[in-house]
Length: 461
Ligand code: AMP
Ligand code: ZN
Image 1 (cartoon, protein in one colour):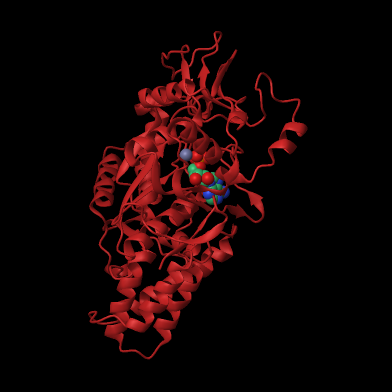
Image 2 (image 1 turned 180 degrees about the vertical axis):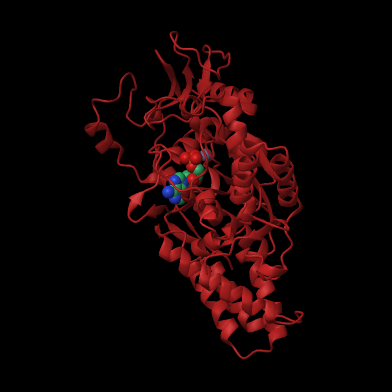
């Protein structure tokens, strides 16, 4: 039996699908005004583990993830600027271009980390009509009001607004007389924002209320309902969504459909940098590329994340990455020495299943992995057992080959060939740029009297 901690009920509950064998899963996606940082990626690793555990338990998961490419403001109180517009100023490109660039980079990160892509990707800007229709539904049911800058949700109309966050509404009302501008209640939020008359926005649409753009929260409620229905199994995000984004998603759905959107609400706790919060807006953050540039295999980061429970904060530092690299290397080396798998060991399988089904306890599941490695079971049985475990771990253990035997990928050979041609044509700038590209992919090129030589950079271990 799979048990999961549901933030809505604030307790561990046995999970049963609403419409077996299918499990409908919605995970809040990236705001694509910048690269994903490794904190964001921790949340996506947690959600990937959840999906794999559901599949391990025999469920058929239908997974939807959005891409936020409009409307997420720099401040949760609806006063800031659209993050996408901030991104365009920084990158000197259009909002549409940066959305494409950072979405592609995000998908590359997911592939590097063995995170399964959702079955359905949905972009906020592709679903403006659905968002407008949902706001009209909320309006028709009497939950909206208009201010000079937009259409707002009146949270006082819902008896249990903020239940998931255990918000103290009276305390909030008393404490925030000031920064409310025209909002009637501190927790009210924008459903539609008007474009400012003195400002040319790159992303704006006509609507029944005036030209503008949707508030951030409506996209998830509208797209989740479109692809999964207004009440589905599991909705996930990072812990920051407990206080604002998810209460608002629930409020909108209650006002329009009369449901609380998902049966289970799961939240991944933050990755922090030696105690400091990691945020994109501060500009001070680590990307997966930073980890690759230091010569680590990206799966070292996945292994590092498995070492912390998703409901605890996890602190990142390079010593911990080195320890993860060494452990992963030991595991891989052991597994490659084992012969062809036969039958998995039932006792170990049960032990592992008990840990993952206990609210995704991956640190304890990893301990089972090491007990297996150290056990005196025959190696063919160990191999068969770890292949099963790896359906959840996602570390590619059975496919891994020692460095020297790994062929250099074709695209790297092509880049090296192009660099060779650029050098022959004395086009040094292009040759250097190609070398950088090859280095970024983790390969070093040395020019020898016999021509250029390519080598994969060693993993720190
Ligand atoms: P955003 O791009 O801000 O919409 O965030 C994408 C996802 O990453 C959301 O689920 C956030 O809750 C999550 N997230 C943001 N910062 C962190 C962090 N430091 N650690 C873990 N998850 C995070
Ligand atoms: Zn969302």
